[in-house]
Image: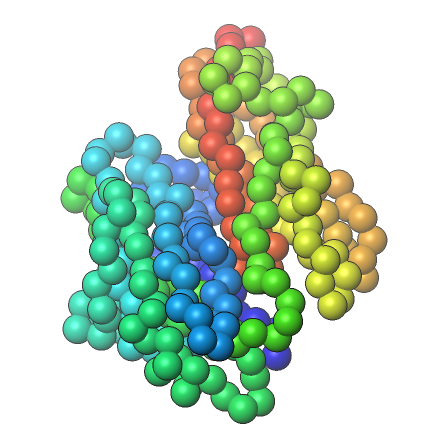
Length: 269
């Protein structure tokens, strides 16, 4: 069975308006990272704690916080599930956007729920993000499996994001001209794509910005039949000078996720 991984279940948190998904204009949760991204239950050993962190953004600058809960569900949840709430166990906050999850008290129960035909189950985590007067509810799933001899999955990392071949500065000093069309290329770390039974992982990249136009929301490094692809997108800078924030999220399709956040300066034409 292909494992269900840690990912946002957009049934409850998506925007049904006409705004482009790559454009960040209001409260959004773009990803939830679990560390580790996969929990392996080893016989006779305690389940490791899991640290959850959200890539949550509110362009207004209002203080932002997230509460998490381990939901009373396995697999795809009902969007109306009250979790956090009556159908969830609150998780201990580890920061405004983070929480700690201890699976040790539930390890035996999880093992009993493991179907005979599969070696893994997806646990559901619910979250409420709050910023100013806005509230966003959503879900993520965390894959838990019994030991099969292979190592647990790791979160893939991005080494850098390039603009026309030049790395975006972490200090936000990279500049582009207003209205210019540039190429954004994510460069994963050399070990980002792990080996699997089906070959190297297929990495998927998602692109977001507070202004300008992306020509695609997502790209990948491999086609469905394993042909290498260039994961770049084209981004057209806004026609007004100012600071633009950019985010690139990398996922491995098995629960691993991480991201890079950058800003750049748009200069007058």
